[in-house]
Image 1 (spheres, one colour):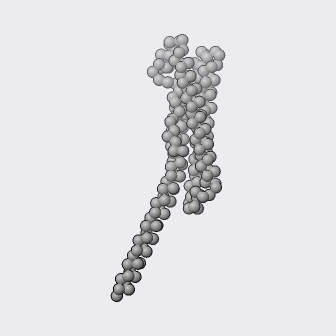
Image 2: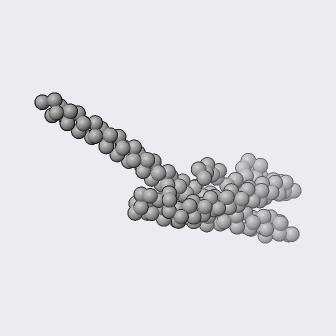
Image 3: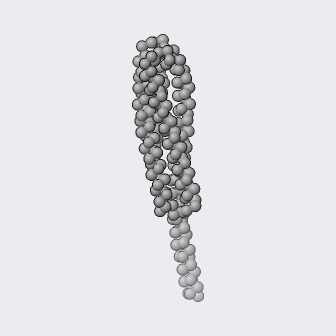
Length: 183
């Protein structure tokens, strides 16, 4: 009788140890999956924000097209606008690259749970960090161009133009969306 009780107790202890090990392993894998999925969601959200920003600015800039041709004889404003648009495109391209890299990582995780030891994982993480750094640099350049553009517009000598287009009330170019980068 004592032997049966000892065997049952040993079986319960083994089962408890197995369940604890399984719970720890499952939690670790879920955490890693959530962390990688965050990159893709974050890149997608930022790309969506950027798309709204680009559409809004395209609408504002279209109102200025005729005025720029008429009053911007030396072409400084047009060049500033072109510079800002180039930086916006750079940001969009890097967000797409981050999104692509995070999709590859998520598919790799599904195929291989030992992914952190895989050299391709480190390579993709480096790629994401490089694109994130380039996004940050591009947004800084964009913000400088946008500020310069707004100052030039607001300092326009023609008061009628300023009043008609509301340059005193709002900026023509906003600033690029802030990236709360997890990388």
